Image (cartoon, rainbow, N blue to C red; front, top):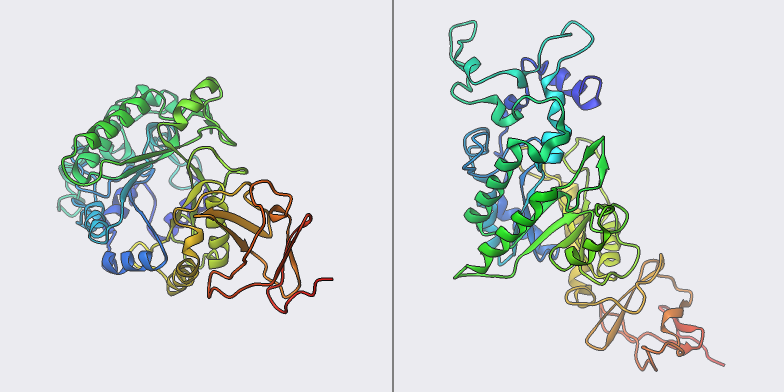
Length: 437
């Protein structure tokens, strides 16, 4: 996209996209610092209970031994089946395994592909087509020095998509059919426990003038996923599919709102960066990244405290957290990111009974306290601890579902906490004992 900061960076560091395009980035991608075993151990230390591998992004490059996409990480770049390696390591550690697909027709064919078949409108390269205009036949033409092109025998249109300039009919494109086959290929190869789509389940969310959503593809993809899992003779049969836009702020069922209740029962809603405002009747997932979604040098990280707060906000409202740990292109992570993960994990280890298998309380809480419940216990996560008395109105003696509280303890060390329960609430003294009249 001429003028975009990322395009400017590409041109300054790699060259003009007519000469050094995305296919060259894929060729030059190395994962020599990737240690999936070490990373999986780190994720478990931080309390992760399932793992999601990136199958592909909006770039349309598959990170597995893809049967229907020759532009993949086995043939080009790392020369590794990244998804397959992640799957083996996750299974080894007993982690449910998922695959994320971002190359849905509307997002890739409709939203990101058309600009590839154009050229600069200004400057010394004005009118020079970007390399997405190359064909398989061009790969057989020798370079100026007589050598073969590195991509000889491959078709750039398999990566960039067949040339089209209007993406609005993405579900009627050949790409939509190929997309379904690629998802099916990954499901059959790796038997994921979860599949994730960075797209809407419905058909009425509008973005950049493109009708977003898998639309008519969704029922076939989900039915295929569930039917394959149902026929398994080994391992888990319990599987989860996640989509966006099921009700809420980014509702993609505006034209047929009666579908929301049905969809709620057949898949899990996933929402990017946005936690539901209220306790939800059905489980949901919120996606958050430790840094940017893709590593950026010098980019700031979210603190362990912020991630803990996000996690508890989700658990208290009947959701879970999908946390992206941002890796360098070479596969490693920054020391700062690792330390945040370890700090987060230490907190989780201490407070896990308020998280795993916990359910929402009558109210989720507020900016000062977050509630969950489990096994006859109510858990209150105090976000801003203080030596001054802390009042929790939701746990008053007038609360019908609470009754008389007989004991208050710190989860960390089971230390008894002085308290007074009244009609106004439960007053705690985390420091010195309270003096009651």
